[in-house]
Image (cartoon, rainbow, N blue to C red):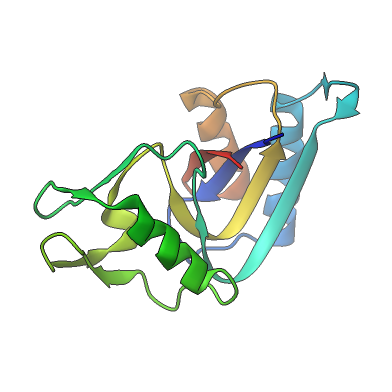
Length: 155
């Protein structure tokens, strides 16, 4: 059986909120994702990562596009990259694309479904909804004091 995880992360991969801002955002997300799934309360995790960590879409990934040449990047390259950095995170997001050997950043690649990188994450496990809408994301951003984006993973 697989799980779905709807994560909200800052748009700046290295940014982290203070505890009060995180608590405000958690309370807001908790109100936006209420309910019980199959008799179990929805689980929400708030995590401060020690290093920039990949927040990927798991089995939802359809394609990765190169922002330099437009080519598709082999998803196995992405899987290997995640494996290489799963324990220690990313010291830098700088990379060289395998398609055209161009220099870019991992967060500049075009992911079909969204992926991201963060040192802070609010993750809703098996939410009863697909996405937060723009107004809801703006409210979470206001609570945190920083713009946010969302990533939905199938793991």
